[in-house]
Length: 285
Ligand code: KIV
Image 1: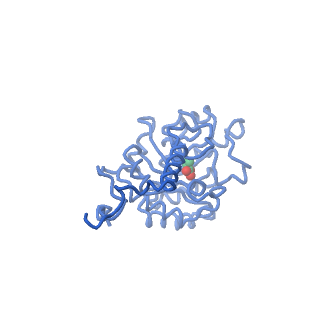
Image 2: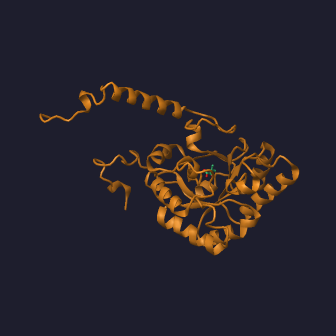
Image 3: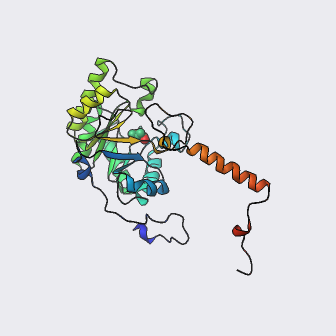
């Protein structure tokens, strides 16, 4: 069903006013070393509508566990959650490639498990690609998916689903041994057929080495400008949370502005100045 069949007179979810041709996975892959890839996370239709004209890639990240659901990490996120939010983002976008994160536990057991989960994601959401975390260990699974027509984005460096193994979210690759193994991971997932690789939380020198070592675009988060593109969690750049990680640049103070709007509304209700004359239905209208 096309999104244009929405009844926009009764729904807030009206379509993006200027429909655009959607980018494709091969076009994104061809951006290696060229125009930087602009990527952001999106979890809902309305946010997707607002971000889509500005982005090449919208990632339905499993960070939605923390951002939307208040979970302590991405570990509890389910495939049902990813499918519901993935479909919402596809409904709100016309231009960007939409990729959906494979949640923890939905792909690690075997290539067959990964195919079943990824196929469900693509069928139920209409997204073009999936992203999964890991390096050499997951390369065989990535090759299995790619050979069966599922475009895959890799994710190396700081991989949040491994938070329990890492013991936190500290930047990685500062020492030679760890940097070497992250470089091996990136080479392995690139050789397995990823069309892009998210490189998260690594020192600048390593980001540059990884970007030079692989033939697909790298998309950095906390990985310097030495990558072929950048991604951030949208709510971080909007300033929705008090804590801002060092690698995030805040472009707004949404937390402050939402708090101020709620305070103004509360004051109006208490003063009985809302609803005012413009917000009231009358018999004679
Ligand atoms: O889950 C997520 O949002 C991500 C990005 C931050 C890369 O994986």
